[in-house]
Length: 320
Ligand code: CP
Image 1 (tube, protein in one colour):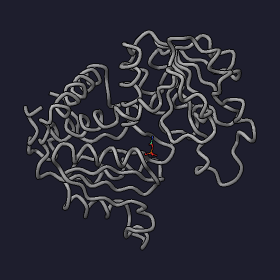
Image 2 (cartoon, rainbow, N blue to C red; image 1 turned 45 degrees about the vertical axis):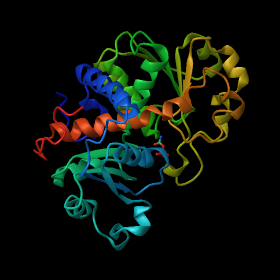
Image 3 (cartoon, rainbow, N blue to C red; image 1 turned 180 degrees about the horizontal axis):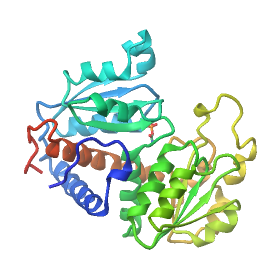
Image 4 (cartoon, rainbow, N blue to C red; image 1 turned 120 degrees about the vertical axis):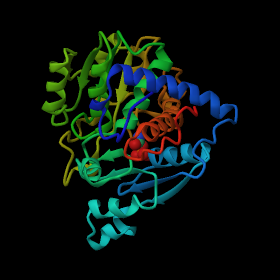
């Protein structure tokens, strides 16, 4: 039995839990393909999004519908919900939990998911809290690495781009600490290096890591390139990287330096940090990466509600 109450950050996942979750996701892919997945009939997920999203909100909602459940959705919540009138996130959660069995929350403030958990009686799924974490994305990313390369251990992973404000890269770096014999190579423009708490976590967990500036020199020695967008919405003025971001882009010349077995991932959306010409390269796995979102989101949500003592209903127990 997988035990999850809320999903706030990746540090709550240990290796046995990850292995069980990924096995469940694999199993559920088969169930949905066989048309045998209506276990959430009569259940409602609320998606509260106070920041833009394409993949995360729609994959949560698609997963719910595919499993026979229903969705209440707030998109552009800063403009369209009572947050615009000054309501706090705590009061919003107190109300919405009366309408739904679980809540997926995206919010611009780091720590918003933890604030929601503090008052919630239903499971909270963090769908991104500012520059904090994006745990479901990191789960999808690690699951994709396993599917693409056949393993999640013994890999050298280059995290590239905005490693300071990019919550997906931040969560993946933290989650990689649950893999074995991993080396992380951080390749960030000046000013966008990983925050000290991430590096400290990796040190404490004995994960090898180093910082490099020269992406071209790093590429021949890696198994995974995890490219990220500069999070311009987190800056009030110019990017700390200035105009230097182009030096960190993946183009055809960069791909020529990458080993034939390696893959390129990106949480998306991309802007200009991966050239469209790279899309047809078989090593470009970022659109394949977006597809497991459905199965992992489904498994995560199911596991969350199955095991949650908060709901206590056990309405998924034994049903997968
Ligand atoms: N990867 C991701 O979070 O995409 P969206 O912002 O489109 O949800």
